[in-house]
Image (cartoon, rainbow, N blue to C red; front, side, top):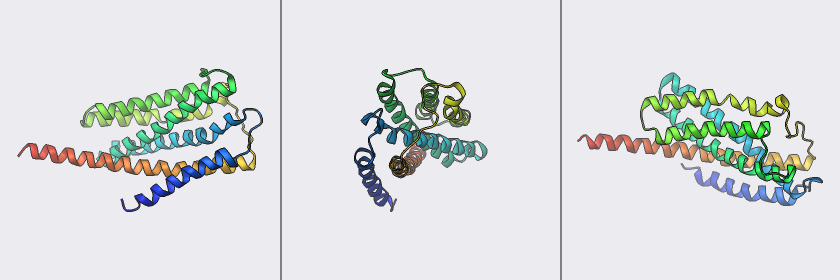
Amino acid sequence: MKRFPIFLTLALAGIFAAHYLVFVYAPMETEMRADQRIFYFRVPSAWLCYLGFIVCFGASIGYLINRKSKFDLFAYAAAEVGLMFGAIVLTTGPLWARAAWGVWWRWEPRLTSMALLVVIFAGYWVLRTFGGRGDGVRKFAAVLAVFGTPNIVFVHNAVKKWKGDHPTNVQLDPEMRVVLYSSLAILMIVFWLLLINRYRAHRDHAIVGVLKRRLSRL
């Protein structure tokens, strides 16, 4: 991957820039004070978690239609990256809850539905990682991704549909918007860098597996 050093440099520089924007440039919020800065990492991570699962959904449909392994491997990679950002959301969620509500966890609609979404794709990852190389496993995992991804709609609309403690309409100062969308853009670079490299790793691992099986028959 000839452009890997370029994207890696952009990602590293962007992460440093994001920390400067979040901890220095962004104005202090009046109610939650410094704890509010979790917002600038948590919200973009949630969006990128959705994106990872949506990419997995699309690639899984591609695999179910034409059975090409590249779609299956791309779906696998997208699920992994989505899970990583989902783990960030579920890690920062209790931190936010402690600061905002005084408890580490509350069975609040959005938190609960987000946890269920991540559990579904954790199941997908376990199935693809430990279920073997059979086509049946890959088809079952693809079906799980296809039926699991629409849960994003429930997560997104959980507050409006079932109320809860999450704010429905967050008003941000112009400086806060700059920091939020800058963090999103920076994490987007990290997202695609991880996605492409995880796909290449899975592809290379599959090629090595095929070569080993062919050599074993000689």
